[in-house]
Image 1: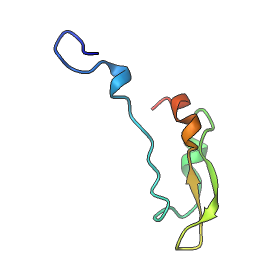
Image 2 (image 1 turned 45 degrees about the vertical axis):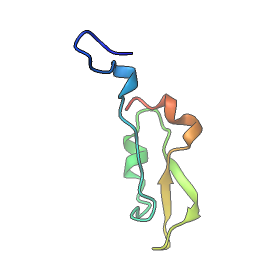
Image 3 (image 1 turned 60 degrees about the horizontal axis):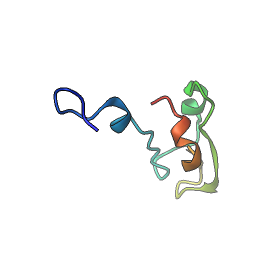
Length: 65
């Protein structure tokens, strides 16, 4: 679905949150900044020994981008 100028409409190119779990230090500043409260600590521990932040894929559609 494209707009008048041939560009994708907003819903087709909305931002996505991508968290690099291997570089995350688990400070959760991103979680405190998330207006919907979707970001949480992961149950997994990364190679640095931190519980990285995660945004559950099933809640990605709720993200305001």
